[in-house]
Amino acid sequence: MLNYNVTHLEKSCTQLAQILGKNRVWKWDARFETALAEISVADKEGIYGILTRHMGKTWNTDNADSTPKVVQMVIDYFGGLNPGQTLLTSDPDQDGLLLCAWWPWGNNATISIRLAVFADSLSDEENDALGLLFRGWFGI
Image (tube, rainbow, N blue to C red; front, top):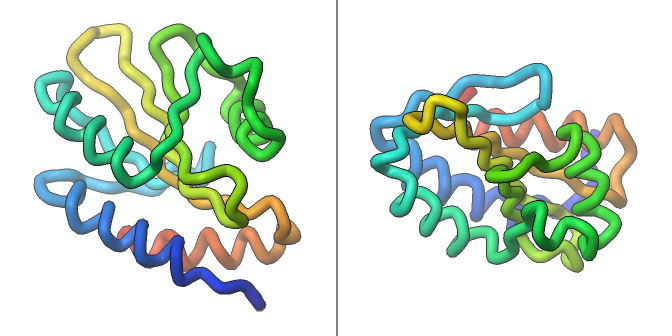
């Protein structure tokens, strides 16, 4: 059972799912427990702009040393950040983090975006319940 107010996360996720969902196929990435979509490099500026407006914070190899604890936990979960990769997050000082891993492919034609939610204050069981809600918001 999840005893947690998910209103702000639900609002952000449903807006992103609606905006980004046009012409996107979302699938569940069980490896990282994220919603996964692939975008064309031709669409990157528009998609990146949408994500930065919804998230607000960007982390990459230039500023990864100065991340808050919760953001560092997420970066570590993904195995670190490589050059060219970016982690976008909502406000890390607010409980309940919306995040997007932005991973360009080596072919210079495709970018994977992985979206997820995470709350550091929740137990693993509660984060699993939050993950199920998240999947519902993205219809996966």
